[in-house]
Length: 142
Image 1 (cartoon, one colour):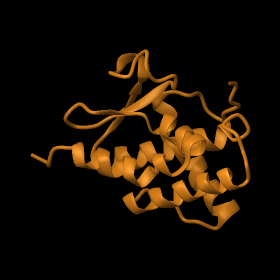
Image 2 (cartoon, rainbow, N blue to C red):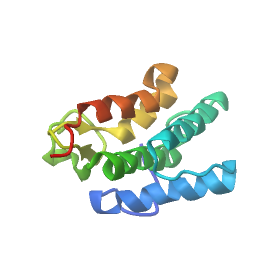
Image 3 (cartoon, one colour):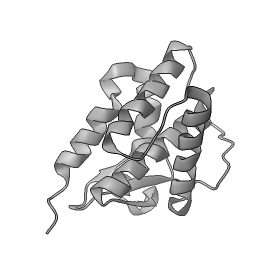
Image 4 (cartoon, one colour):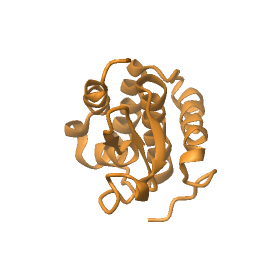
């Protein structure tokens, strides 16, 4: 699948991709994505809207990518995570996406892949549940 992105798909650009999701949500859906844990539900609703429109992963490739980056950026900002290259992670050889989020305690999460699965598989891939699972795996602040 070829995705036409505004920025290179690297960990250093993940926040810029997430900001594209924020702008699109505001301009197209009049939603405010504010990087809070609660806003993951709004990102999920956007993907559900794409499902309702009958879009495929191929047709919605860029919006799914930036929404996945948005969810990942929520994890980075709220769960003390960081973006890393997938090939340098525990998901090397598993995730086809170029970057993933590593959380304190070492858990590695694939929010971009999860966004695509949400479109393809529906409610079983609910993004707020994904975020809650990640949050539950983070050790408390020292």
